[in-house]
Length: 248
Image (cartoon, rainbow, N blue to C red; front, side):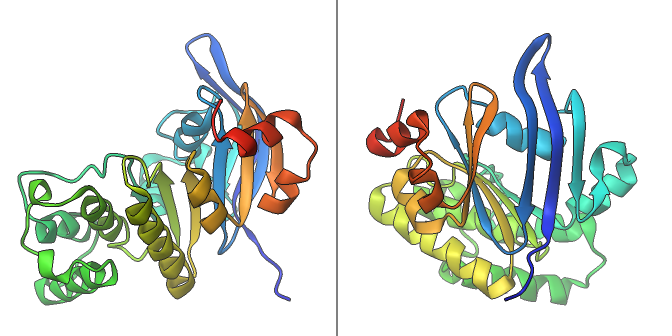
């Protein structure tokens, strides 16, 4: 059995909005080639943890290491090099509506690589094929269904072949069948590309399909880190209630 190495190491993270403390003393390792799901009730700090993990907000205290390097002490150029090895699937998809899917996916390749137009073209077509959108290559986001938009946004997040992918509520707004299809796609891509994935979600069905590990937050504290089965057997009332009713 191979030893899993942490891709992300968080130690004693404190996150604040102004004078208000949102997260307190968060320490956790995100392991290689696993899907780690961040859970908790509304206002528990799920998205705050994701944003501080990515330095979209600067933590008030603590350290965050990607592949053993503390990103909080890096200068902008060094941090940008780290970000090139990550992808982000936003809740809204965040596609640019005025350009085609082809052009949307081309943006990170044009910005961050010196690949020829021919190679970029091949990579764009491969990524759209991977998410089942080969026939939509010249369509605009406004012409797509909700599920197609999420798939297109996933293709763009994977444009640079990142080993680390972040997803914020990927199933939000999708019907159960489309949500299950997206989950299966994420699982397939994880296995195919040996990715490490961090996902914020509150969708119970998705959690059961995709989670290798769970981070459970409550009132800014990390109550639990471990597998889904371990979470359900933890004996922690707030976690048991979450899985019984699916919401707070």
